[in-house]
Image 1 (tube, helix red, strand yellow):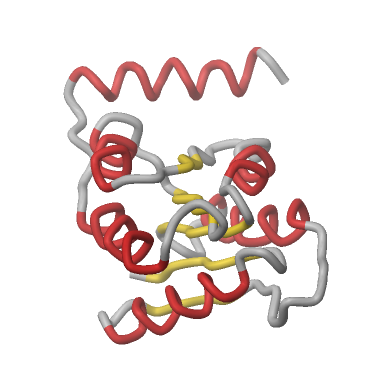
Image 2 (spheres, rainbow, N blue to C red):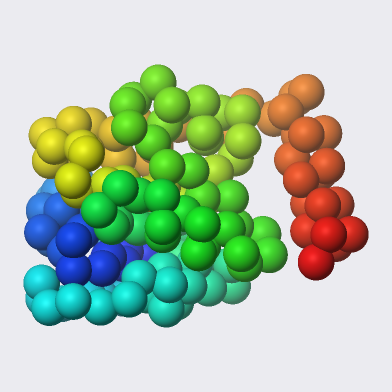
Length: 148
């Protein structure tokens, strides 16, 4: 599985730790930056990684900022992206099982690296349950068509 990563300056160190974790687990990683702790604006970086997921170049994405909220908002502006800001493993599992989330967002200022890596593992190992949830995803997709 190929994973798109992106972070702003606040999420840089957690992105780096996550990239190492993912590569050791055998995932292919496409890193869209940032590549230092120098201040940058997250919307462009989040959108670049989200576009890779949107186009099918990467199967999933993981985005990082201080809280995980900003990058989630930015990524969710792209059609077909379902980015979920998760702070625990249960939420990460439900985001995949029920919402077919294709991007995980994490906040480096609110989630420690040990927990973040567990959340990432759950997010990547959990499959979409389908069934009754599929109809809900279709309703979300229809909102993208009618509300933009």
